[in-house]
Length: 238
Image 1 (cartoon, rainbow, N blue to C red):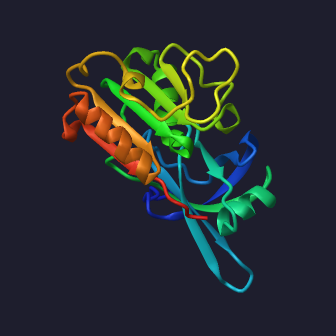
Image 2 (image 1 turned 180 degrees about the horizontal axis):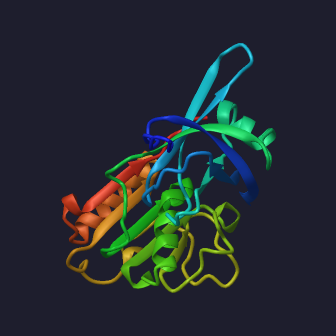
Image 3 (image 1 turned 135 degrees about the vertical axis):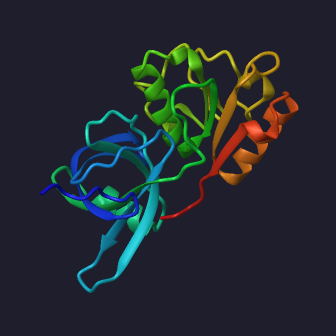
């Protein structure tokens, strides 16, 4: 008898196989799923914690890893002040621990790796876009994507060692590193690329509500139709 397929909405146990700091307040967790479910770049998982008295707390976290058939996923979690789940993950969880997870979830903010895409992320909004960039690179199709990451300072940049490449632009809004030619400042139209958007381009914008609204306005003013812009807003979830 074979196991029945796992529905994406079913809870399952995942083992933490690796933990790595991205910034002083963000950490990536590599999880091995007990019953793997294929995911798409841009989807997310819910992590649930259960206390001895039965109290539960759950939060959604985007998948940062590309679909690769390994049975593992990577979630990057920003520590929030007084965050119930993020605080526990940062302070307690280490390699070898087990977590309850449910997913993958989401069908709108996904990129399948077969069409031109402009990826625009602010702060922690870079996480699902990193899954898209990693997918493009793994398939040898970096020509399909351009990623623009907006962060306050170099210390706030996720995936700093892996991110650089000809298809990536980093915009610093407050403090730029030495040698950076662009002065610090808010995301501008010029950061999104020259000229009108190419035919068939879809933009994926992820970040805070204010960042998403600002970036979306720049894209529309630059000639990209509204129906070619997909957005995901991040807010404090603890």
